[in-house]
Amino acid sequence: MDFLDAIKWDADGLVPVIAQEATTQDVLMFAFMNREAVQETVKRGEAVYWSRSRKRLWHKGEESGHLQKVHEMRLDCDNDVLLLKVTQLGHEPGIACHTGRHSCFFQKLEDGVWKTVEPVLKDPESIYK
Amino acid sequence: MDFLDAIKWDADGLVPVIAQEATTQDVLMFAFMNREAVQETVKRGEAVYWSRSRKRLWHKGEESGHLQKVHEMRLDCDNDVLLLKVTQLGHEPGIACHTGRHSCFFQKLEDGVWKTVEPVLKDPESIYK
Image 1 (cartoon, chains in turn brown, green):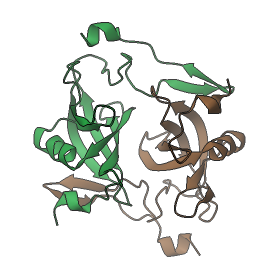
Image 2: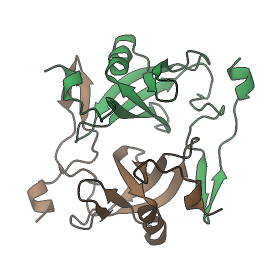
Image 3: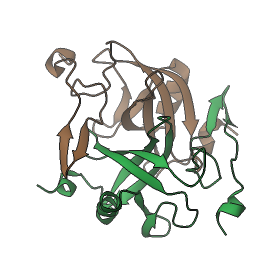
């Protein structure tokens, strides 16, 4: 069986994807892929997601240059979630978030309040022209 | 504003949750929480998910004893995904997966085939009586 057929796609033909940085092990972001996006990711060795807002394939970093080199792809026990081990390219340290931060998970719950605990590494206005 | 109101719940009133082991940084599992589950998680300091199959709150480890102590809760840039830093209790090394494995992400794509790359640490039949 094709490895794509093993994936349990949701009602919209998508699968949730967690991207984790290979070196730091930081969880960088969460997104979705459709069948074509998974195929493209494997073919290119770079993360290609499905943008639900733009309703099209989204080659991560296509605008920002912050591509994700994919080292490893994993599937969970229910065959319905993917985990990628990636290198976040284009900036050091890597910028995965559209806010210019390292990781999308920069809001930490502290005493009942979400606090921003990661700095903006690069102004988003200079990332997206 | 209540921190629960900051979360963007999906059409079913749920939010996806990634559980990451605090020590190893391994991504252990992926699940969902509703509003009450997030509240309970914060109150108890242990992960309480929403089981979509059983349609009820699911205090992780309630049957297996493999509770997840929660050290940290993070929210992503779109306010619609949670990341937990946890200690997986009840076995050493921790067992997060219902198959008796450390992590749910034990299937690795190798040459176009999903290969099981993590051992069963404990027979599920002895975990769930």
